[in-house]
Length: 103
Image (cartoon, rainbow, N blue to C red; front, side, top):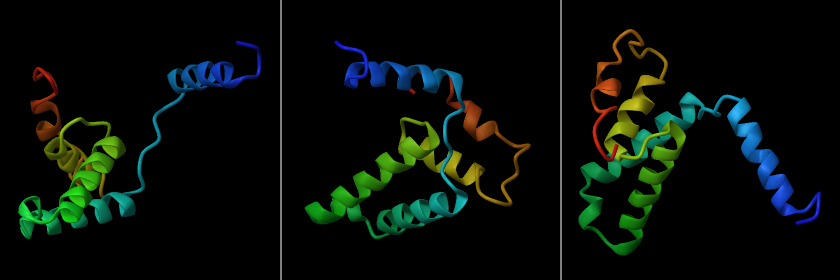
């Protein structure tokens, strides 16, 4: 690949990610995602139509990406932990599953 092409930019992007902190979602965005996901879950959207299930899956994915987790339940805990008023000294829920296989 020639310098300046997509491969070079990709390599520098990876290097940049190693050297800098991961971006965190704004608490307002996290709160909105939590509310949308929990509303759909309370309405049992997982047994609803295709569009509703897809929206729930999209919200779960976005929560996971926004919190750096791989599981929607962990993402919800992590997102709540980042909201204003969260008890930052109590992170036991976040660390309890950290060593679990497949997490």
